[in-house]
Length: 98
Image (cartoon, rainbow, N blue to C red; front, side, top):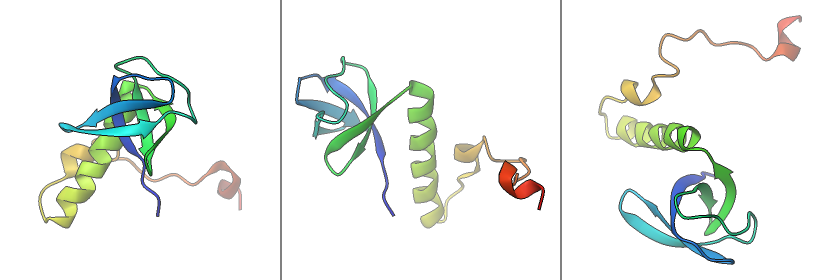
């Protein structure tokens, strides 16, 4: 399984950027998405920024990753999946009429 990590650009450059998540910084290649201004959220994977994110999407992904970690540790995680609590699962449209 591949996991993308949301990070925020703190130092921008044309080919690389220093990005931060939870107080830790990493240098990411920006070759796939181009130079981004400081403050931009990106999805990182294997040392590369692969997609620009808006702040809400970055927070949703980060909450989900934190929720998984909390679940593995046996701690409460419901608040981190607020968008899924009390929601009825739905079939994709192409499976509904079968």
